[in-house]
Length: 328
Ligand SMILES: NC(=O)c1ccc[n+]([C@@H]2O[C@H](COP(=O)([O-])OP(=O)(O)OC[C@H]3O[C@@H](n4cnc5c(N)ncnc54)[C@H](O)[C@@H]3O)[C@@H](O)[C@H]2O)c1
Image (cartoon, rainbow, N blue to C red; front, side, top):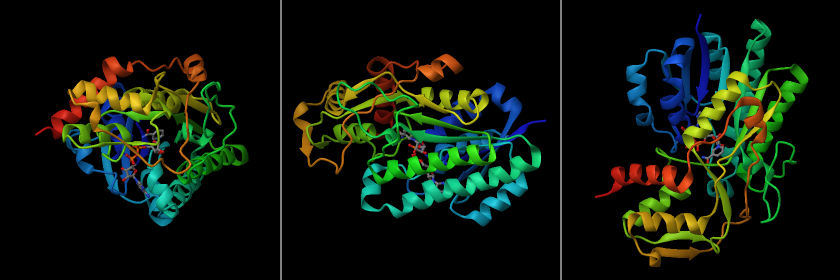
């Protein structure tokens, strides 16, 4: 019998790519049905996955909000899920600085609703898989010479966004420790690729460059992020969901640390635009300096590693995607 898995937040960037590359794969389709729940906030677009929904009877879409405990209860009763992959979140750091409440409501309380329903189902059937999609930002920030984050790095989030994600991770941990709910957590670095909302760094830089508008660079532009192509991340999520050890955290990184300024310059170069479009603006409050991920645990235990090279493949693919979308 096929297993039914709840996917939350899959009208957004990473989740919609997950639907395309993992949930619609033949071997996955043969074993799983998916119910996709998304509240369709400003970051969720049904059009991201409409083609897949139309073509695949093993996918069902339900517009619903994970903050609504009663609706989540009805959903779990109706579908008797085998597992959950929780992508749904408020995900933009700048917005969390302006308006943190919704980050706690969705990222913390929404996750708690899912954990409670998962536990009820687990206690009924004795088997369950819950995967929390988290972020390297829960570890805080690094200096230039610090070793990369491992799963043992203490969490020390600095923004309301990362604090809400860290809180959700701790709730997940507590449901494993207290109730033995089979939980895994992935912590991933900055994703890039198609279907990302334009407020995020790479699509924003591409959009501005295509329109010959200024590219806003926070502070000096020296901040460093590790970039991972979205398909590499999703492959890791699936490996952890299907083979990760219960109660464990897995870091997923792209092996591509780059300064923000360098990424903006690469985009300008690729599009044949002048560096005079770069515009240094006031730094983000509490801006983390550097993130770097040690993913050797996922490599060793799950045979996972990133495959897409940043400049040569991933960035070029991403620029071409947005160019086709936006170029006049
Ligand atoms: N983008 C990254 O670089 C990155 C890196 C590491 C981890 N993550 C994590 O990955 C997950 C997905 O990130 P993303 O970049 O695709 O985010 P996104 O903002 O593009 O998408 C989030 C999705 O969640 C939905 N959503 C928001 N609130 C909801 C609610 N209350 N109920 C149901 N659905 C709701 C939105 O409608 C949207 O479709 C998040 O948990 C994020 O914290 C993202």
